[in-house]
Amino acid sequence: MTNLLASFYPWIKAFHIMSVIAWMAALFYLPRLYVYHSEQVGLTGDTHELFQTMEYKLLKVIMTPAMVATWVLGICLSLIPGVIDWSAVWPWTKLVGILAMTGFHGWLSGQRRVFANGGPIKTGRQYRMMNEVPTLLMVLIVLSVVVKF
Image (tube, rainbow, N blue to C red; front, side, top):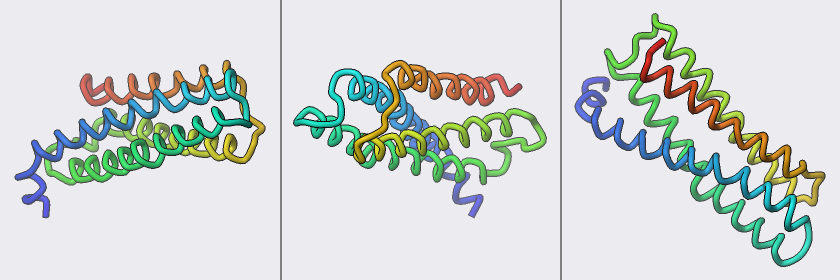
């Protein structure tokens, strides 16, 4: 199995990078939608329904499939001998960042349900602050992989 994965290493890595990009783009955009939804739209009316549709589709059609692909392809990469030195610190810091990113994804999903159920929603300022979480986690993950500290 590992020999088969190793023969497809460049393909797995390429698709892993693409899925990470899609996941990150959605993780950056969904909290921004929540900012506008909470500050400009509220919880009733046609615009509320439009935002509900945009948020739902971003989460279900782009963000969650990208997260699943990222995880599956990342696990495949980790199974290839020689790709990861588990005695080093960097794979563990990367894993902590990935788990935190996945938890943030879950939090965003829960917030979508809060909007769908009519609140109580957070303030625009709170959603703006939460919008920084994926950036901080991305820095941790990228530095872990590239610098290998």
